Image 1 (cartoon, rainbow, N blue to C red):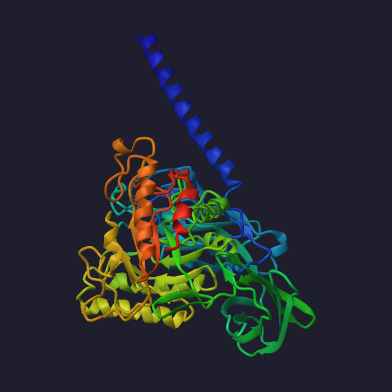
Image 2: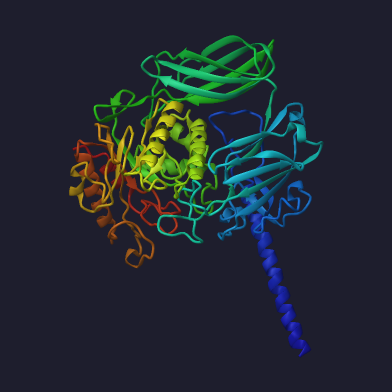
Length: 607
């Protein structure tokens, strides 16, 4: 009896030991991978040379009973018990946790030391994105909070720093309510239909940044290809007195354009607005993505006190005569749906190369643009779209339940989105709503209609240089483009504007007034090259059994759209599979399911 008991104890010890070993080994592997993950500067359109990356291993814990604040977890004096690899959400494998169950409240802790060379400057902590509500403490002092899962926020932590080690604590709250803008994140326990695994908490880079007392706070750029100028709005903050602003604009080729302006900072902050001529402007397009690099310096006396770097592309997007024009020439949109999900990281690419590779693959298939569907993407993706040449329709994540809170949260988030991304030449259209999600009665409800119109007008007031698609798919109100979603297998359907299945093209009281029309969702056929007949996953319509059958349907539908002069472009669903949805041109792991050249040849068809 005792021998048997001893054997049992020994087996239990071995099992526990093995479990601990593999957990430690797994965390060490995640840490080893994390050492090389997400180390690139996170805000490429507004860069400073000095910064401290806080990605990597943080302490982490769940707070399912929401007792953390009451018990003083914000002080950072207790060990949280788990390790997590930031910037990956706890639901993801790359976080080292991989728990996809519901946890409304979570806590993070990071101990850091400010490098000695930065200690004589103001220090700011920056968060790329935390989903959905974040509260931040430094050394036990509350810095503030932020609401919204897709936009950045920052806090000046200088006055709360200590010599040596400092403790940064973050509490994130992310409920399963459908009032908050959540896009394709499932509000059920598991993924279902076209909704996928949730992302909770930190999912973009966290970093420290030194800020001089006198500095550039923000830059806004508008290019004008007809006048061959770029307009700058530059926010300067700091000590009052005389300053000099120096710009060096470096074209793709030719000599640097130098611009200098003396000014006096009469308030704590001030906006400098001016135009700079760009002789022989080299235009930006997907076919020729010319970028101008910009170095901005602020000088006090003989000393340069701040320097930031940005870039711009000389390009214009407009509509005329029912057509879309890029750089004053008719331009046909050949787009594909891209939802920004990544195996292992969910919302977060494992490395910067994930974003680059997706764009290269998109162009390899012969597309000139993507509709970024229900997600505001990491700025690194937008950087590569700018650099490699890809057009973007940027679409807001939807809320799914109409309420006053939902509309207020959405309006605030949408404004922050536009302000974050307005300098990227790749973005040609803003899309605040999709298929009437969250505005389910917009077809006839005047309050919802006016809300959509107000968001259109807000968008136009914040950015007059891009197109706006009010409500993707159908039931349009005030909009610059009419887009239509239809997953028909019958190409004859694409012979008129009346192609939205069981939905009206325009909301009641609104009329079509000759805007360009784009078929912005179609196809979507499920396809598993190896076992399509046994596929449990889903797509739209019947399942092609062979590559040849898949390509034949793609060709028939796509050419039917291209042949119709009433359409200004298309967007195929979709670039890659996501979890249970297998209607991609590639698998979730980005393996090509069909030959890219075959798709590209169809996309380049001219009637």
